[in-house]
Amino acid sequence: IGVGLYFVKAAHIGNPALVMPLCLLVPVGVFYIILQVTGDTIDTARLDGLYFEELPHVNFYEIWTMSIGNSAAIDFQALAAALPQMGVMIFVCTLDCLLKLGATESKLPLKVKKDAELQLFGIGNMITVFFGSAVGYMQLKFNVINYGILGNVTDRRAGIMYGLLSAVGFFWSKAHFNFLPRFFMGSLLFFA
Image (cartoon, rainbow, N blue to C red; front, side):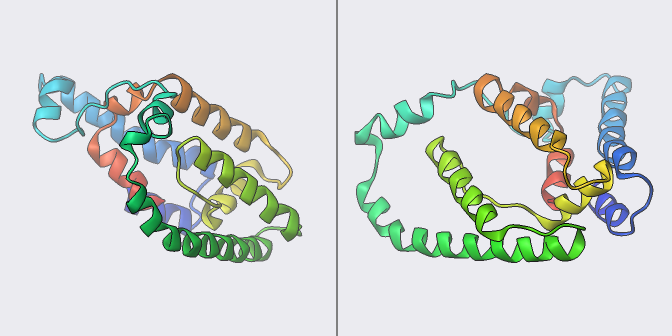
């Protein structure tokens, strides 16, 4: 799935608003049809290695009660040893964000206010790290895909949808991942 989706995107085959969901959802649908036809269940398929181990439900606030709220669980020596790498990480992520901003300007019809975008990038990373996630930054191919689907550079619907889905996954439940087969998760990793 990931290889096919990559080449479909790279060759600009079809409308990305149709092609991408079809390339992602049709194989999963075929997998579930085969699962039903063979009489297997999700539990037997999980035992056969077609799914990852089931993710237990963990309340969103437990990231603090199990770490920051429980100082006995923190290895401060390991934290001190990691501080130099954190400095390098901040430098590399900021540099990469700056390079992605320049590449975005060359691929899309817009002029980016780099100072404002880098400040927003930093604020966003501080918020995500506070809530227990890793730092991140945009990927050029997803900017291009978003432009291909929406057809403009001012629409905010994709960002709003991403934020809402992330909030659902963070505050509510991760149970939906328990129903996605391994090949689907691997293809997303390959495509990203």
